[in-house]
Length: 247
Ligand SMILES: Nc1ncnc2c1ncn2[C@@H]1O[C@H](COP(=O)(O)OP(=O)(O)OP(=O)(O)O)[C@@H](O)[C@H]1O
Ligand SMILES: [Mg+2]
Image (cartoon, rainbow, N blue to C red):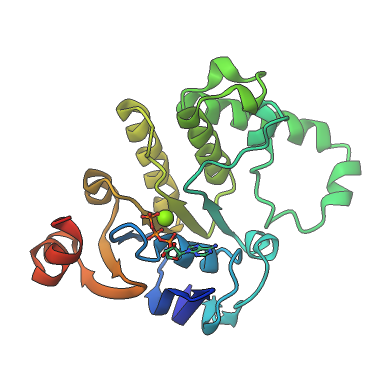
């Protein structure tokens, strides 16, 4: 995915003004910066949830700027939200089953009527149960998602995004409120996707998580990119220290 000069104003607030990004397969970019820097707005634009006022978003050299989020999801761009987003009246297992590759189900009806469907469904349930185990939610399989705590909802949302095997995965503070051993389980699931080619943008305040997962870092402040480089490079940048690390 290539992002050229995207910008967004809300009312009088210039949330993002001219951000360029280049996402490559099997690479995790950390997007960091102080509160209100514009990180979530950038993710929202990449996911098709927020329409950019200016700029272009290219996916495999096709202009996808302004496509709605369900179309972006069909093309393999999957996100998680800063506040975990689950379907409260579905069970935990049902929520996970919704994750499976919407973007590869090009012809769902023939698949539904084919005799292989039940076999396929059983296989999907098996994989969803395996994911439940890995994010520590097995015992909640048949509970309504509304009964989960905030941290558990977040893990459910991440599990759903990971099952989609996205081309581009956009994670907005995925580890907030998640217990350390489960955070490591999530990180290793992300590693697995990255090894299979997924490009990831990770918004995260916790620098240990950035250090653990990211090859490069983009620092935003006031809606603009202030610095790019490795975490060590941006940490050493005086402007970044003033804007971000010093706060
Ligand atoms: N829907 C909206 N309506 C009005 N203003 C908004 C909206 N969304 C974001 N903003 C404003 O745009 C700016 C950037 O917000 P954004 O949520 O992108 O920042 P962020 O870097 O994700 O911050 P945080 O680290 O606190 O999550 C902020 O000033 C915010 O108040
Ligand atoms: Mg945010």
